[in-house]
Length: 452
Image (cartoon, helix red, strand yellow):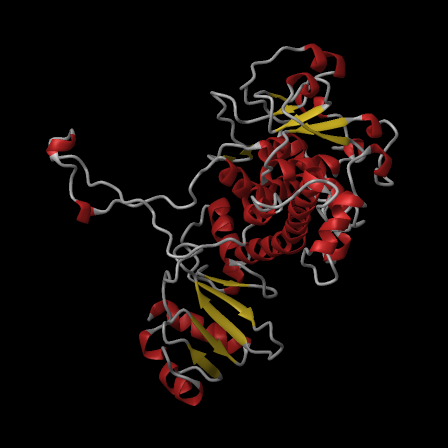
């Protein structure tokens, strides 16, 4: 079971953990991913996702509003007296500390994740930069210039810190923020708590590890990157700039310089931006008595609720949608030679988002690039079938092998005549997708397309 003290993640007894010195910037390991075991869920309504102070953070529309945020910051405060029903008496005496002043998404999410664990569910919150006060806290996140999980210090601002996450088969490149550090050491347990609250079945160890990695990729990594100032887009070389001039310290033979990435539009709707706005305006009176959200601490709690609710929704989406689709695609790839002797056509037992999963399944099977077409039944209830060309990469608009040029942009009876296959419905003008009224018809289209 994952619900154990964090010390067991590192093979340390409680006593040893409290007295063991450690370098402040050491990248502490986790237990092997194969040892992870937590429950998962499928088909969960969003209103059932949140617990603790996150429970009251959303109105019936599912969108955070002033009234909802006020509820999150007052009715669900982090003082010991308002601990959730699941909080143990011992947890009520614990203290989580983070810095005061302007808050960011990473520490808001870190605090949320900690408070989803039963032993920290009723912990009080202290916001300060005073080292003497921080030293008395049970957990410190995003302040203190120290990373040491044995004493529960999770800061990432200190000189020399360069820790990243490692999951089975992958070492991530993005430097961790306080959210990533808490996720690294408590993420599996937080996921367990979120999905177990729904009373849904447990995952295998392999699926549990896959969910842990996917939730990081889908949600936490972006929080880490934004807080660490890591650009999402890398500039490409611009040959039009030419080589660096000799007079600028080069000899005129240097490689072409790169152009700075230029935003073609502004986006202020991301999670980090929404959390940031809860800090209030620069000219706004945020004193406790006048602020409808209860002042700086109340605003931080509201921000933590906003970040946490989206995190919980991501967890459920991964386990309820992404993971089942992964199983459908893996099974289809395994049966591809039964579907067609070429092994180049995959037939899904039911429609599911398949692109990213197919590339992963191909790699796992040592069959990268082999599948050219995916066949599935139309999910709109028409009973028709679709044939879709596989792109060279998940995000590409190109195809490994498009449907024949003579079929493109042709429909119905005319397409029957051109293709020599009865029951045709259409082929898109770009040749990436087509349709037929029957399974037999769509497979005939696939077999002909392979050789044309």
